[in-house]
Image 1: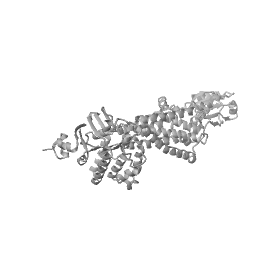
Image 2 (image 1 turned 90 degrees about the vertical axis):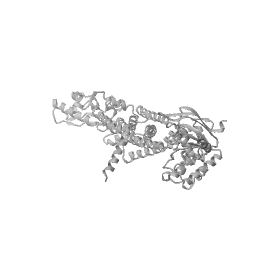
Image 3 (image 1 turned 90 degrees about the horizontal axis):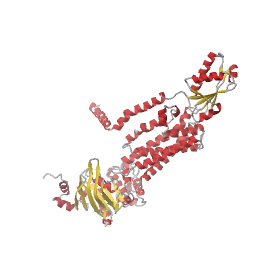
Image 4 (image 1 turned 120 degrees about the vertical axis):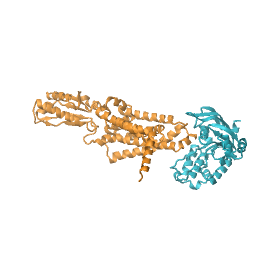
Length: 366
Length: 239
């Protein structure tokens, strides 16, 4: 063991990094960006879920509960009509609504507190605050009125999913698309960079090949691989992991395929901005991580701070994730306006990166 | 008239930043000629060759290849280009590489003949990554001539090739030239320059001298091509 020789290696390594500004930036800027984003996402989020309250109680108790709930800090409550509730769950403006039925007061006198709790159900963890707020309301109402000995028995209804619906069902739907998008992107960008670094791209440029032919050929080749991968991921998720699926398998596969196509072309496009495979790998924290954080995979877009929502709403991955969840969790089909939008945005993004890839592939590589 | 010259470079200039890679180069290569571009490293040889296939866009001047103004993508089917480093797909076999380039140039025959030409036929199944440098160079050459181009551009083709094979390469070049193929070779090996019909000496992006090897020697007043080159290039040899 020679200290000199070890020091030589250490010094050489640091010297290399000194010239590689991009890597340095990544090393010191990326963690701040990613952690900052995460912090802002979690702390800055409007954490209180939007809950609707419909009071149909013919007695006085429903109104007392309703006002107690409106003061609760756990939820952000608003008064709605019970008949509008499902529509509001569907369009995402509410995560739950509570109905105090006509016989609420009379049943309470018999000792049972039985509000109807309607949960959207696709997002795990939203039922907690709603039930907690109800419990709080119960204790504050009980303190001022009828007294103890009441039996709390909310009737819980799920619009989607159900009691057996777990975190994997929620995340699985999004990850089916994400896994394909991410892996296909990495493989394409590295393969295309190889073509550059081994000199064969230069050689291809000196043949009658058109730029469009190169991009299209790449696209077809990788699409074959990506589709096999997408099919494998889908079969594994549905058959082995038994991820909840309400919708058409063909539709899920179609969405996956669109994501794979986008990933191939995004890889070709971004490979123009990297000179080495090392630099290409650096696109992962820059391109992929913020998209994962902001696409609604982990945190629903509707609970993000407003400025981040604006970013989320222009990220194609947001629409892809939303589309996959709509199909798998809610059983959406192409007659749904929201799914049409999702598919449209992903397809549009796909077309955009194809064009970008063709345009940036320059024949003259000076 | 256009047919007489396979390549017509007229007043071509190209700058990369402050560097004048080509500084007003004018030269004409006749059909069926073996033309050597000579010059030290960094003289502009590779830039000149790349500009002939449209990989470098001149800032000024015109380039006409096989009677057509460049850049012209369709015209490239008549041109073969062997890059300086053997640019091949290391994960493919020799035959797969050659067949790929043949397909790109739009031909589907002649692969076997081309492989036999450089004695790679027996190794056609070998994956390129496992080949020696000289074999890769041979494979690279096959990829450049499998489509029987009318113009063959070779950027230092014999780097890493042993003397025996180098002789074979040159015999082959001569045969092709006799068959009407125009060949432009860049080199800084004088022994190769000797085999060219005409030479162009390049330094600092300028064509310093042009002529047959004998003419170049005569002009420099020496019997040695290497010395002639050094004299004409202005660096001189200590007398």
